Image 1 (spheres, rainbow, N blue to C red):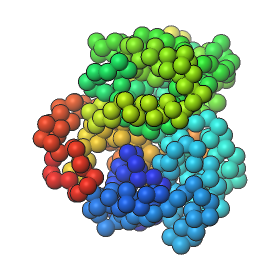
Image 2 (tube, rainbow, N blue to C red; image 1 turned 135 degrees about the vertical axis):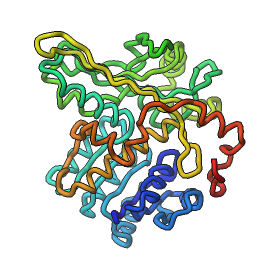
Image 3 (spheres, rainbow, N blue to C red; image 1 turned 90 degrees about the horizontal axis):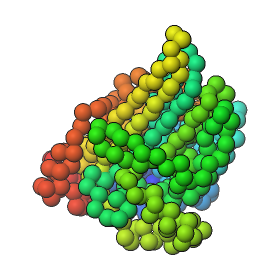
Image 4 (cartoon, rainbow, N blue to C red; image 1 turned 180 degrees about the horizontal axis):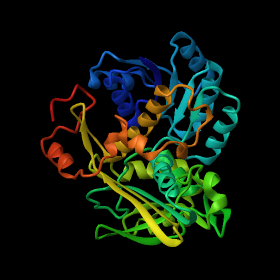
Length: 390
């Protein structure tokens, strides 16, 4: 069995740990600075392959000590992005594989440097965007003789928006602010450039519903580096309901809260509720030539909340956890195939979708599942005890 340490027992780490442990192929250690939080996840999953630990992974000494006392094959960081460099350094010293969910460009550059010469795989950006969206776009790119444009669009949205932001907090507030506030990368006229976040506003219509999309940081991952020299334009934008971007510009730019992110985090977490009733929209479009003709191909998918291990998980939890667990599974099952720094686009989409964890991206879901579980009153305190059958 593969041995894995997961750092962080939050929204995503809780599902990652359950998926791996309940597969029967992994012995999982789940560590969190709040040992009680990790233990509550272990109790909720109720599997003998999952153990909890209290560990402050932001401190190099305790993390190194834990890895020495509890050897593993890989470490998965579901910690805030600013903790990941230290975790990657600890993984390199311990001689184990490393995976994270970061969208932060500077963190990814640091991980690339740490990975130089490593025989183990160092795989950052394993979430949804960057992550799965890069894999989907890279697969479409292989279908073309020459490339003109690549568009990546992803959004995690409430199914039933009812506030002025038309948004609910579905994942890390720190990560959200980081995406909205940091410079973004794009390719324009064949050149890699920096563009401003919350700019490049456009309308996009999918299945008869109108959305907006705008620049956010990190979603492009390393795809521009890999394919940028062969393309005229490439960009990543986040999908939201119309009007959201204008409100975030007010908060971050006009009220200067991009320079006071602690206050912005408190405002958002106090005013914007969390929800399990969300929907994830994944849209990749590639334009180029095939047999001398200009053509476009698209990958479009909507993923809804799903019941896994008798518990309702939001769509952003499902897609993020499915993306990283599928990648982890491929790396550990195919020994020696992946070494050093590994970009997301090195994984093939058919392999991800065929993987036992990647199957959660299968299309065809609806919002009915989450609606029924919520109406039944089974979602409010899922972590306090092992959930009853849904």
